[in-house]
Image (cartoon, rainbow, N blue to C red; front, top):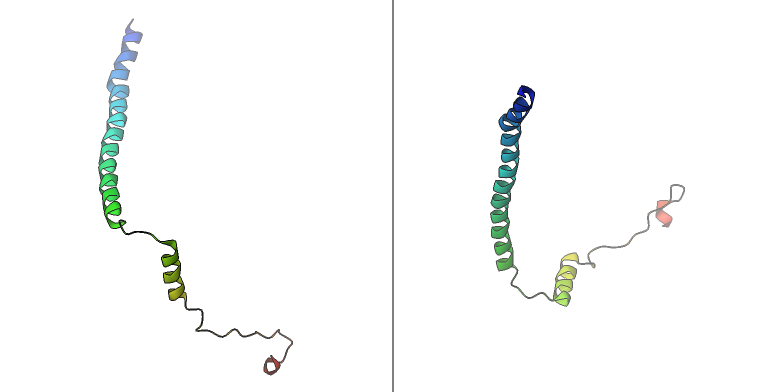
Length: 85
């Protein structure tokens, strides 16, 4: 009888606080991060109210690229004369 009683007493002293700590920590972290993510979602939604047009975005990216400001030159092979290229 004493062995059975000691086993349940060990669970109460060690196992139960561990389970409570793990479950409580999970729920607290979940609430904390959930509130943080909700604030971030509201911020992103408020910033992304601009209408999206694919053609306009393509035009903006092509203006940034500026494909006319370089010259395509051939690089000579190791055995070639660079003046003939």
